[in-house]
Amino acid sequence: MKVQDEHYKDRTAASFSRQAVMKTLDAKLTIDSPGRVSISFPFNEIFTQQKGFIHAGIISTVLDSACGYAAYTLMSAKADVLTVEFKVNLLRPAKGSHFTASAHVVKAGRSISVVEATLHSAELGEQKPVATMTGTIMTIEK
Amino acid sequence: MKVQDEHYKDRTAASFSRQAVMKTLDAKLTIDSPGRVSISFPFNEIFTQQKGFIHAGIISTVLDSACGYAAYTLMSAKADVLTVEFKVNLLRPAKGSHFTASAHVVKAGRSISVVEATLHSAELGEQKPVATMTGTIMTIEK
Amino acid sequence: MKVQDEHYKDRTAASFSRQAVMKTLDAKLTIDSPGRVSISFPFNEIFTQQKGFIHAGIISTVLDSACGYAAYTLMSAKADVLTVEFKVNLLRPAKGSHFTASAHVVKAGRSISVVEATLHSAELGEQKPVATMTGTIMTIEK
Amino acid sequence: MKVQDEHYKDRTAASFSRQAVMKTLDAKLTIDSPGRVSISFPFNEIFTQQKGFIHAGIISTVLDSACGYAAYTLMSAKADVLTVEFKVNLLRPAKGSHFTASAHVVKAGRSISVVEATLHSAELGEQKPVATMTGTIMTIEK
Image 1 (cartoon, chains in turn yellow, brown, cyan, blue):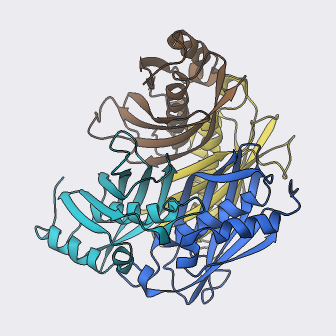
Image 2 (cartoon, helix red, strand yellow):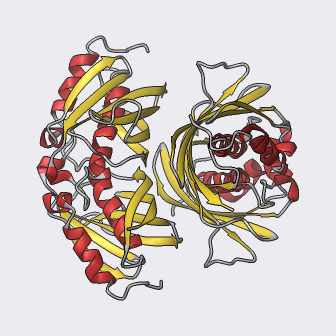
Image 3 (cartoon, chains in turn brown, green, orange, yellow):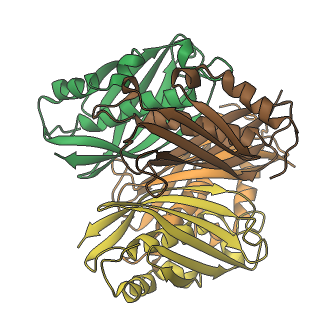
């Protein structure tokens, strides 16, 4: 996909580093290509639900940041990103020691982008996704 | 709505207390009536996004637990609860010192329940909801 | 809710009359108040699924038009309406001779509105909704 | 994906032929492989919205049937299919003379399946999808 800002990697990494919640989750961003990013984070007992798996909302936190930053790579240097809505399907219990949310932009519009993301665990592998998200992301001109 | 288990309050509170993430968020459950619960939590900088507001995924964490436990109040003593999917709309930045997610069951089915929830902030008030969720919750017989 | 165009009723009715699919479904619009509309339509065997109930997509057609026109009542005379996305939960089989989709705007933003709608059947009544929709509607300035 | 019923093609085609709405839309089913189906239909002015494009709900009708029958190919001979919920993102105006909804099962569970589908138009082609759906489909044992 076509970038509007050649410094998109630095810009995206800088915004990610301002998300305190990503630090709290010990999450790391990888910018794969324009419109594609992944975020990895380790299992941590303090983010679990009643059965000891990572809570669906914590999964959504990482999926949503992945969607937002995938869209953000394609935006102009002056734009900011805002999640309008997302939908998550939980496919399997979030078992594993490490998780990766991979997001890619499906449609980059002038004001609205649609992004899809999938969460995998290191143990279950690519064939057994844990959760999927479709998100609608808005471009805010600063 | 009709309960199957007269001890639904104790049972729901006990499951909630096993969600480590709720402790991490300093979240408190209130069981309003069968099919209706609320969960409140304070602002905490460590759960914010790049602009200093509570991250949409953290909002979803509390909305999802509220949806799940609203459904759980109506289940039998032997059942457990599993989120199949949810959808969140973010209506306003999550400004405020305290937030409350209020959930109510729209349809309690034998295996599938549909629950709606809204998040308010103490400062913005009831007229200005921060986010809404519709969730599909499954009953798992243990 | 506050209107920007005092002729919102005529404007909304005029746009509705241009939706050929509404004619095909024999659907009628009622504008209840700014931000609130309903659309009614009769059972018709040609729109059914394999069990003889109205197809979920036909239900969605009417729910989506109801959401769009609820948002449209609040827009300026120059604006047009565009559905960004919607999510539908099917709560019960669409049994009945007549159905009504009632929509109300939850948040009317400058460019994005969030609208909720519920479909009832004449026979099942208000207590037993058939389906719910949450939709994200965009304002397009012509 | 693994089938439970070797006659899945005949069974799926037979159920599709009982959906009166598919006949009304002049829609044709293609069963690509277990867990994958497509449904094509032509433009027809009687299903359009106010701008002359196919209405989002009609698009959803075909996407939903595609999701349901993709899941149905993997079910036992005794099962029936029920849509629990779906979410649709509208990416582009539905311009074109013919449209195809292609669905594939993401997760086939015992009672719940998650299916994704995309709608393309003959004119816009594979690179410019018109709409996407994620649907949750339930297996009903007859």
